[in-house]
Length: 196
Image (tube, rainbow, N blue to C red; front, side, top):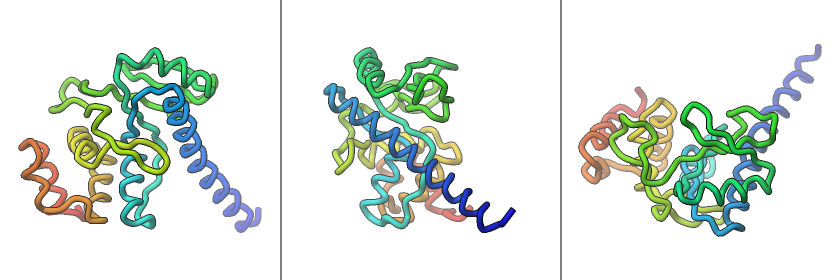
């Protein structure tokens, strides 16, 4: 097969995958806003929104759609998101809304509950929904709340997201002192070794 054709097909799949994530996020937040349900976009999409305010070229794509909700609003969210074609599922301790009846967990909106620990061993609970700001497209966690959340999880992708925030100047050497000691130490490690 012609390698140019294969490359064109691969390119089209890549573009489509990115567009599907953005569309999933758009539909979910529109549904929540229309229902008057407080929320905040978290995770990689929140990082992308904040990074884009400084340098659009530094935005990293993500496959995840993570939304912060209050547990008390879950039933209302189920109803609102069902109208947009999402199907609620609780699996392996995770609440999610699948993007259609036959979709996989990767094709879902993952819910993080405000004020609750995502994992029992985490130092801090997730932020409150009010720790957010309005952007032209949706509500996202504010920088302080997002940094605390990313440093609490501290998985590889969380460290990469923190490095993205450092790279565009949203986080600097003054930040570690603003955080609880464990999180401050984690951030200092990234500030000291951004290429590690």
